[in-house]
Image (tube, one colour):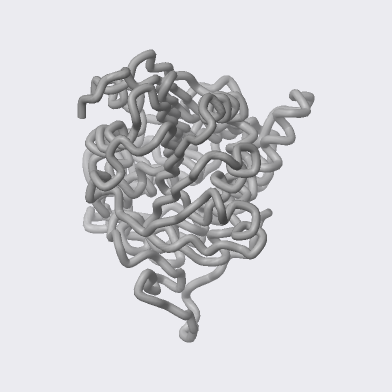
Length: 393
């Protein structure tokens, strides 16, 4: 993952859960004005761009992810804690706060800070969460694509983690976030780049395009078949985010997970037109297909998800941050044997969240990815094998 931090200048200028197969003929879900049902998952009604769900299954995934990322970014969050303790009374905004997991962790350490969480749906708070941080936290429903003028110059720290999938123009959003900081404030941005990397931390590359269901219109098109591998070998999978900022910390995380030898399938219909290409036996990991599909579908829904690789540049080009720091923080998904115990622990924490992400993308991929239910189920199963076992032919 990459992380970056930059202070704002002192100026007054502006566990592998069973998949909820969503294809049965009957289902019942309780909705409200903030939610609608989409492919048997509940998604928000405020934004058509962000189509990951908001339900109990997603809650379990987000809890697992939060625990892993809090561990991966421990040093960054230590800087945030120190910054908020500089004065007796400070304020912090968490953009995309979900159910307030990060706020709860920070509020337990800094009870004197007033935390505000913003998301597309109301935060469903447990009794324990409400009791532990009720006096120092509040949560509001707001789509940040519409701007943040109401929060101008209100916060000492702004925390943003894994937000780009729901953002229409990421550069503009970063500028809006900068405006919510007080002079000398700290901004933290964490995003992942939906890439796949091998154990040497090199992005997986291939000569053919990944499977795109829209190519069904091409004569001779054949969908790939994702099957359980007949043989296996251990692999190392890594995630990497990126960040920027010193008085304002900015982090963007790029997920990477890549087996030592790639998972099939053979890819059809590449290159110049219809039919199987002459490199149709090229082995492409299912995770590559899946993450590329997420980027295509998110883009089709209106997301600026493809901008994550430019996080540091976007932060710098607002000209409202100084001492911008950008770095990679690698999160192992399936580490090599004999690795550092801390790395193994982090991987164990993150794997369930990554598997949950496969399930969470179903509404998005079925709505904007062009997949049939059968194709998507096969792809998810193959990617799940890679994540949980790193087993590839």
